[in-house]
Length: 458
Ligand code: GDP
Ligand code: ZN
Image (cartoon, helix red, strand yellow):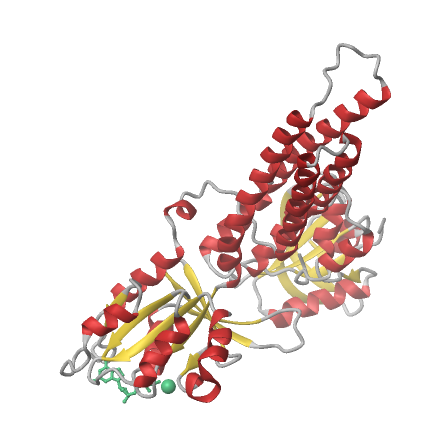
């Protein structure tokens, strides 16, 4: 286990005027004290904040006025001694403080290393650690509260309960096999095992159902704006970006560094990605045909299909209707300030009961209704309840799917009345897969990989 002292700039979520340098490790307080002018930090009480100045011990120059929090192990995030230096200056002075600390013998933390230490010291489990990562990346308030809930350990608690059920089942079979003479232990029957696996199977299915919504909250609703040239796609995009706070992010961990644009529509993050022509698509059908455009469009969670109120429906429009058939879309009839030439009845027939919204983007009419419709396609009554445990992590989803498959295998074997000690291999496998979610059976390399995704300083 690491025993050196690490440090990093750890600017809090919601970035204010305050910047924080964090230290963790056995030397944290000693190092902080050596560059602090104020009270003797090695003498002050734990979990107190001290006002003072940072000096460069080499030049005796005062770098910055600071507030220093002293937190002694084990009641800290990493369960090591932790010091947080709060500084009001901008990045320039905080970088200078970091440099001084590094000169005093601390090591620059790897991305996610603080959280990794918290995990390694048993302070948090793996799913909680991942929730911290989600929190760092959370794009909207709703996504944030999902991450917070997971950090609370709700997912962990549920997974642990399911694992316990499975473990008891396996143990029961073991006892039957090893101690057949124990009459007071009821013989595990195929029926009993079926009930148990069904129960856990159902719980995993439920988790996977909300996983999709969780993923969308975290990553944004991949949104395409389609329509013939000149119907108002760019105008719609601009309206959405102007009316709602746009968040521009670089996707971390990708070499492509795609710039994505997020707009937050009533708590639903729309992700307008400029890849595969998904962001704004006008001549997609023309160019690549209905079938292939369907494939491209299928990658989006939501399609905003714009028509022109001032023109009759064209063959191209009909092709677009064909391309979006069965997908999630909203029809927008734009330019209602101009005389109506579009036949609303035909549009109704073609649009399979999907929402039809009329707008005049130039006069800013109908935008409210559109935003309502967007939010509604996403929120089923359920997800608003705030009562669900969301699974929003790709790795968790993969593991849950595998666990579900392992249980399905067990059920198939039960159908065939295979011996219970064979069936319990699948059950043990399910138990292991669920364990990986909370880090119980996760291998070292997996853990390293996970924590390296963290932002620096967390
Ligand atoms: P795109 O080609 O689909 O991206 O369409 P644009 O957003 O570039 O708009 C094409 C033209 O239609 C521009 O001149 C816009 O100002 C105009 N336009 C957009 N929305 C409206 C509207 O609601 N009413 C009217 N009269 N013109 C509009
Ligand atoms: Zn355009």
